[in-house]
Length: 494
Image (cartoon, rainbow, N blue to C red; front, side, top):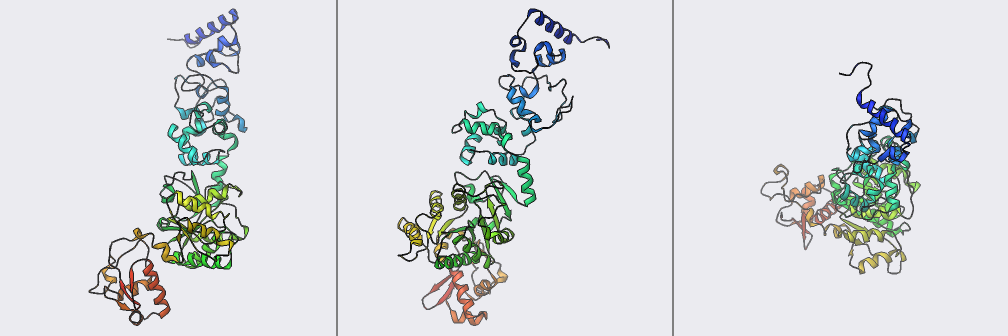
């Protein structure tokens, strides 16, 4: 047993070895060995430090693969660069150490243990950090995930490891390996919490399902508002900022009608057609989503500040850009990709040949989504983009019936409640789209036999105008069929 005042044998041997190397004039390189780059030469290190080196080195400064000390990793691993003082004898993340560096006795650390900042990080936080790193987009992230499997491992990887990934160059690898230098993750998360927005990742059920299907879905989405199941039945209404009164009226009318029928209207919140489409959907007390080309805390154009607040209260505002990101030539095409990706189809109301709406239409075509175009005057430059789309195969759109006719699979077969139906009538076909009170009253008087419009008006007691507009809506939903002579009947359940 070792006496109370006796030096342990392992320390005595270390002392003798240090003295022998000093006598023999061994150079720093031979004495330090694999710990080349250590701050203290061997003759200045205490025997306790020497034991720590021989037992495997100073924790996080040693790589899991080679065991070689990295001065750069040492600097990145401890918070000295941020001005945080380390209490003597205490490792800042809770582990004990002696001397001026932490010690351990094993020979291998897990990969994520090489970077203390990522140890307690959640996957969502790691993805937010990667979204803030320059040169990292959805496609490059997929390549990185194929190699590392976890976003936290990407942030903890060394530059040499990152360079082995296809498509990752020196600038990207350097940006990721030194992400803490340029990314203030804590401040970004605090801004999101203070602003009242959620940060969605692809694994979240609230992440738009259609957007998840494209080949380059955004890494994260900043969202203000409430997601809804109706968003899987979303239609984009887009067009030029410099629009005519005809274009504005058409966009507002289509936004109103599609939202009234239960579709979610998606647009980019820009001047002109986008703004008109949002206003039309809100006027119908329907749902609309605004996709921004800026950070979620910025308003562009400034005059739409009140509109954004109303959309956030009644629908949802989305962006993939971090806080304070100003608009530029790159952000709007990226925004257009989200608009096309999260919708079943895109309706181009009015656009010239250089309009950004044509970029959205191109994305929609690449994602195998339907493209619609509203015709305009043949001599109007504002409509040439729409006419060009029609020539290339886009469906001509004159009203909501042209849009819904492309999506027959929205129909479902579960019958309505028998209590809502009169006796001796077949069950009413039920859609994923909801029925209004007036629609239900009209459906109650319709059967398989044809009924004249005058009889529908008499039996329901509704005004003629309300009956006509409601029957049109039911036809668009393919619940009601019209025969010659303004006679109506319920469509057979499929």
